[in-house]
Image 1: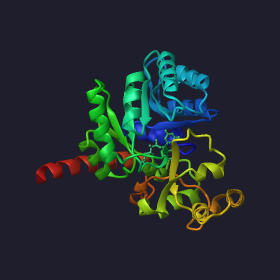
Image 2 (image 1 turned 135 degrees about the horizontal axis):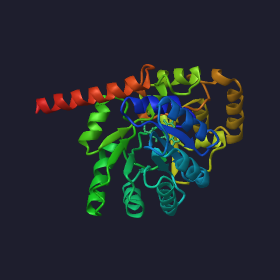
Image 3 (image 1 turned 45 degrees about the vertical axis):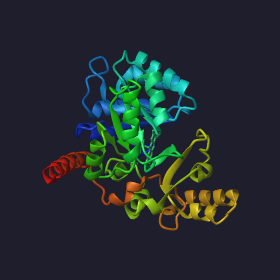
Image 4 (image 1 turned 90 degrees about the horizontal axis):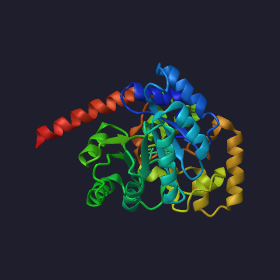
Length: 325
Ligand SMILES: Cc1cc2nc3c(=O)[nH]c(=O)nc-3n(C[C@H](O)[C@H](O)[C@H](O)COP(=O)(O)O)c2cc1C
């Protein structure tokens, strides 16, 4: 999650027993210093002993592979997260290079959004983990996709049929509390990935107006939308054609729906951007990527407390459910 997920957030998640991911996105200029800082916060003795217990996320279509190789070699993160290649062959190159750079110590996680992409990733890369991203997820994802309730079991069945049933699946998209975690586990996922919920973590690198916007929004099926407009406004519209992004339906989106010319919309967006932190809010034009689970995100908490709460609540819900039937 660029730029919100830096060393403070990732290490807090890992220290609570999750695996926190640092953002690399496409811009890797600060990644080495974030990894150094993470190592310090985790009191990690160095890459030669054991992998650093955080992961690093890469947007494959835009990230610099040689820079990714260098940081993976130098820091040996526990996992690298690969997402959104222009073509499947790029995933093969990235997987091989990441494994080579870490001497096989760094696990390769690949996030996909369809059954076909899961089978292809499994066949070509044999990743250590497949993250199944459903359509409710915040941020970028496939424009055409299913929610995890059907996607996770269908992916599991397809992988088992093709002889890849050994690859653990993690569910992502719309999970914001222990109920969502318990549901994903009963679907057959080995674990869950949460993005939106951690936007309200104390350790997320967020401006106050952005945090307010995250806490303000609710009823995410109505108040968030999948669109490419936000990329157009930000000038980040080089994503592969099948991707868009889910975020809060802001004033820019409503104006575009009513037919506002893109140039005018962009001009107004840039004006709002210049206002800095004042550009968020109900009538705002600042862009807030979040998933449909946003209505369940109601307060700012420490990331460790969030992880512990999710685990405790999910276990309690699973036990209560078993007791009921
Ligand atoms: C603000 C934000 C930024 C994100 N940035 C990335 C990213 O840089 N790379 C990536 O693979 N996924 C990114 N995602 C998507 C997550 O990987 C994940 O699929 C999603 O957060 C899960 O759904 P949830 O947001 O409903 O928890 C982002 C999500 C959000 C909300």
